[in-house]
Image 1 (cartoon, rainbow, N blue to C red):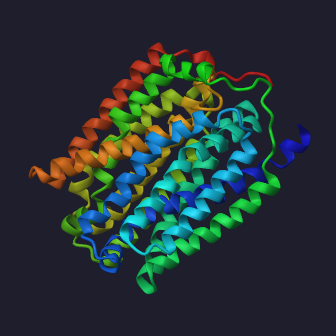
Image 2 (image 1 turned 180 degrees about the vertical axis):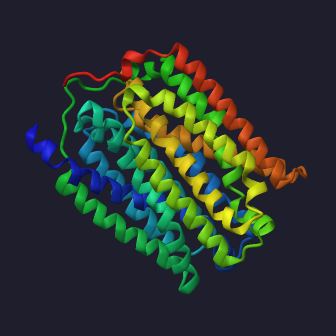
Length: 395
């Protein structure tokens, strides 16, 4: 165990590189849609499928792949998943048409949730109880750094050169991550071979079901608003490309800071802090379109939006993984899948409201209302959950 603990930081660093690459693949397409449309001869509206298909595929196929591979050891699975990730990005970089590019997104999405789930599971297993939320935040941290740096960097590469270079860059990151996974990932053997029927009991766990409800019916409000940050900054703040880029950078900076601050929360205080963060996040969104009309405050609001969004994520991930004791293999995958389902639900609702003539201002208020509902669900959760699951234990 001493050797395992000594390499903990190195293992977490490799996981962060891996999740950075995966996060960049997921989100970088938002800044490349017009290039896809022009180069592959499709409508910009059609290129939006690259986002929605990815999110839905993560939510649906991630858990299925985890169930199929549940009895395989974590290390060879992580290596296999990262190999699939590299191949998918090479396919994207060489895609002759939009259909092949869309297929490459499906391959990337299939491994997303299982990879995050296994990484978080290993991170938890090699950490002391009080360090487990920070370990989960470290795995999630790669994705938040991708939002902060990877997405604008990828957009820059695509704008200066060609969008295909972005996917070659991500594939290169994947190769680096693959080498790291092979060299440092501990080959942990479960004391008991996982049984799918036993792990599926997680869907009868009231503690987990409440968190899933918070994410789908509350946290999804984040994506209802986030989907339209760019046009809102353009309309209310009067920003051009430079101002919008800085706004996204502020969002990403807040995301990274919020993620790692939340990772330091004691397991016993997770629910209480979640209530607080959701209330703050709802307040930020309720005021968002009013305050971003002042350019300087627009950057502050983007920062607070990012900090609240990704300050919430590691808390919710931790609550699912720590509460889902009957599903040590599936819990992390379920968490990643539920977040992507919330992404899809929120973005779809936002698009629906916008298409019916609802203003951006009203959309942010609706998003704030959804997150407030999530806070109410969290208050109820705090009253009924089994708090012994989050208390420090020996071992």
